[in-house]
Each structure stands twice: as C-alpha cells, then as structure tokens.
Amino acid sequence: MMDNPVFYIVDVFAEDKYTGNQLAVFRNTEHLSEEEMLKIAQEMHFSETTFILSEEPHNGGFDVRIFTPAREVPFAGHPTLGTAYIIQSRIIKKPIDEVILNLQIGQIPVTFSYSGGEANLLRMKQKAPVFGHILDKEIIADALNLKKKDLDDRFPVEEVSTGLSFIIVPLKTLTGVKWARINRDKFYKIIDKLESKAVLIFSPETYSPENNLNARVFADYYNVPEDPATGSANGCLAGYLVKNRYFGKDSVDINVEQGYEIERPSLLRLQAEKTPDGIDVFVGGRVVPIAQGNWL
Image (cartoon, rainbow, N blue to C red; front, side):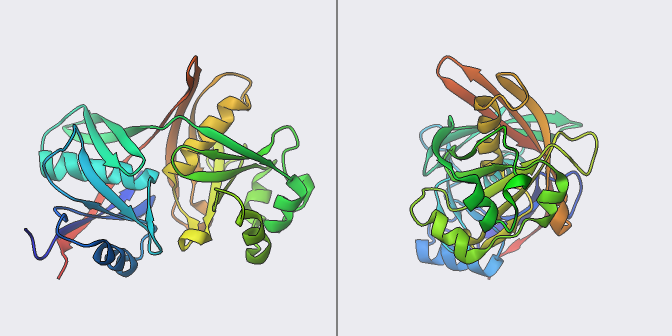
C-alpha cells in the first residue's frame, strides 16, 4: 500500500507540451476511498483525474476510475488515452500493442503506434454509438447565443452517446463556432430531461487547413465550462458523421481540431465506419508527458 500515491501529469491530444488537454493520473490507488478520489480530483482541478487501482491486470485489463471535480463518470476519452499511456510507459515499461482499461462502462482497448521506442499515437475503440433525441434547432441556437441560420440545416441536432452522451450541433462557419456561448439558464432547461449534459459544436471551416473540422465542447454541468480536447465527445461526433453521411459516405478518417479558442490547440484523429452491427468508432491522438510527483 502506498501512503503517498505517485501521480503524473500528461497532455492528451497534444502535438507538443502545453497543448491538448491536461490530465492527472494516479497509480496504485486501491486503498483510496471514493471520497478521497473526488477530493483529489477537486484539488487537481483538471477536467478529469484518473486513478489506476492496481498495477496488476484483472479480468484482462487494468481497473481505472475517472473523476471530474464534480463527480465520477463512467467514461471519458482523453483520460482513457492518458491513463493507457502511463500504464504502458511507467508500469509495463516496454512497447506493447494494446492495453485494456476496465472502466464503469466496460472494457475499452487502447492500441499503440511507436516511433523510436516511444508511443507516438494512441487509439481507443469506443463503445458503438447510441443515438437519442433530435432537438429543435431554434431552441438550441438560442441556448448557444446563436441564430438558427448559423446552424447547418442539412443535418440534425442530435444526442449521441459512446458511453457519455453529448448533444452534437452542426454549424456552417468558424465564425459561428467562435461566437457561441452557453446561456446557462436556457441550456439547463434543455438538458434537464435529457441524458446529454454537454454539447459539441463543429464546423467544416478550420484554423489549420490540414484539418477537416473545428470543434468546441461546453460541459458546465461537469464543472468544465469549455474543454480543450474531448475524446468521448469526438467519438460521438464520429458516429454522428457516419450516421448522417456528413461527408457523403459511410466512413470517416479525419483530423478534428479543438481548443483553439482557449489557447490549448489540440488534434484528435477520428476513424469510424458503418458495419452490419452498427458503427465502429476509433479516437486517437498523441500523449505528451509533463511532470510527476508524490501526493502528500
């Protein structure tokens, strides 16, 4: 038992240090109570903090819990990739093809690609997307301080979940993405009766010409007013793009930029494909180590 757990800080979906979405990962934390984990997550005050319960796999995977500063969540994308990176690089300490994380929603596999012995691309297979309500565009636009004309009328505003549910909102232009703001009172009235408590907005216009889409994620319900990179939301986006044939086909292989508006530019690599059983979704990106220490 470790009285002072070791923790690591990493940037996920980052092309360099101090970009992407920061994450704290604690190891060998089976002795911590749920209350202690939540207090640590509040103190770290990242969008999520993860806890590797044991350094030995159980049932084929590593037991991991994910906490926001507000509550435990069953799944989140960048914590999954960042935690898998720490398991591979700091616990297993050798190149491997795959790590499986045992999360509340079930087992999530993460695969690795390497360059010079270092993992340079991690990719997770998410749960098959589940589609929920189609929402009124005018009401959603109003809650985002936008006009209905800012939304792309070719495609729906739709709830999607790959373990954590999001409202996916297609916009026409990058200007709309930049101007969007959550009207808290109006938005909370919308999500009161929905599974989705957060929203991803996106446009085909981007800051970097090599990228395919620009996205923003607002998750005030989870104490995250705006997230710089959100793997779970982008997994939902990938499923949405395939279901609605956004690019005119039953598959996507694209780069999505996020976090530019809050000066944490991130890059997520999305792959998804329609299959006889549904839609397979993969979300990938780089993980960059920043720091490590002991919790006192």
